Image (cartoon, rainbow, N blue to C red; front, top):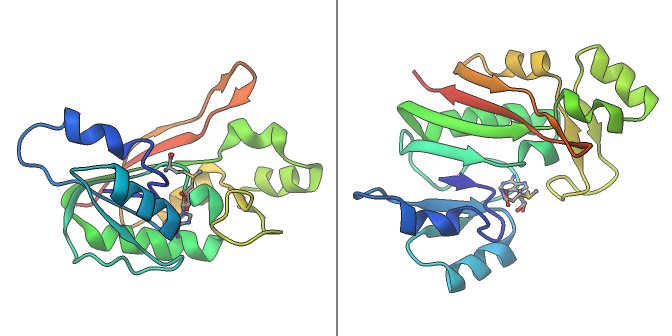
Length: 176
Ligand SMILES: C[S@@+](CC[C@H](N)C(=O)[O-])C[C@H]1O[C@@H](n2cnc3c(N)ncnc32)[C@H](O)[C@@H]1O
């Protein structure tokens, strides 16, 4: 399940590369993206969710959920609520992969923001509507680890700088 699939940049490739009888799902809170996906991508069940949880799926449903650059656009409160919701719909033994704006983005921060980040606090740029791509969250590794108590952290990869561009941190978690 691709949570925050946008116009299907990633999920559109899965129908041709996934073998066996896996079922593919994707959702986003932007109805225009989901309408486009439904019209243009076959082999995936698409649905719209709200900015806030819950998702319209039963508990323990998914073996794998990924969320590429979604927490990067949400408030601290929503981090907590969505992590609980993703935990709910993940099957026991299931894997959650997501990305965040970690230390490689530090030099993009203004000095007051950087001071907060260095104290291990989440930095939120909330001048626009939550969820929008210009609403931004920057998450120090330890801040996020404290929110992940329900999960086992299998791996954490800090984002590199590639051609002077910061890359997002990657998290791989398991529901035991
Ligand atoms: C930077 S885009 C990433 C899109 C896609 N994951 C990708 O990698 O191409 C952020 C996406 O998160 C979606 N989004 C933001 N808040 C959301 C929420 N609460 N639930 C679902 N999708 C959300 C936006 O509509 C947008 O499609």
